[in-house]
Image (cartoon, rainbow, N blue to C red):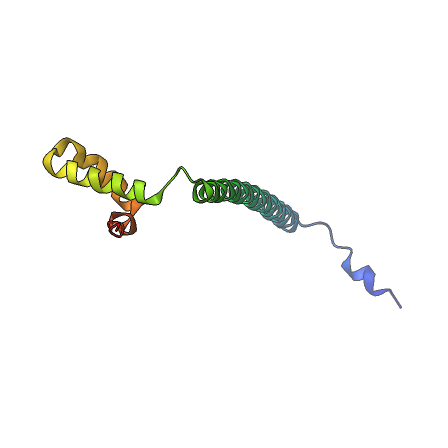
Length: 120
């Protein structure tokens, strides 16, 4: 009896070899694309991580500044409020100051615009 492998000793078919090469090429292309995608993703993650650290340090510096301003007896929020209110009044009579008011009104907000309580 002959072995079952004896029937499969056909000569190589060039079409099958060509298809194997094509599948191998597609597999390599997919592998390289996935590696590039992973590298790109890791690079973006590293960039965002650095940006988060930078923003956290800025936030801490700003918090330290606010704490220092609150504890400084020479700085008064009432003086800052008075200055802003006087600047707003000045801008009503002098239109050249209007761009300055428009620029910083969103930063300062309405809480500063309220006049401080009257002193007795």
